Image (cartoon, rainbow, N blue to C red; front, side):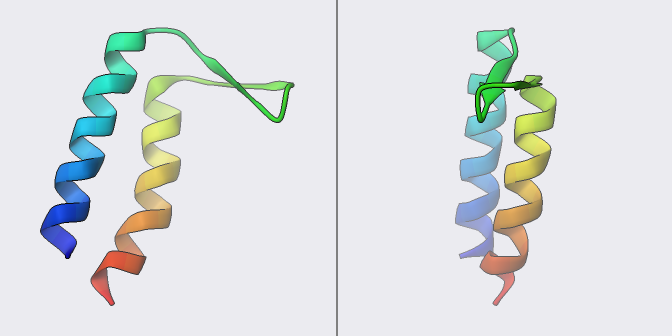
Length: 50
């Protein structure tokens, strides 16, 4: 499951980098592609390790 999660995160990171612009979170916070990737990685990897 860990490898699947890592592959999914890599795919998301590539997609985020292609977008190239920040997205609003909750209508007022802008996140860069790298920030979105880091947040998802921090959430998903500990769960996948179980």
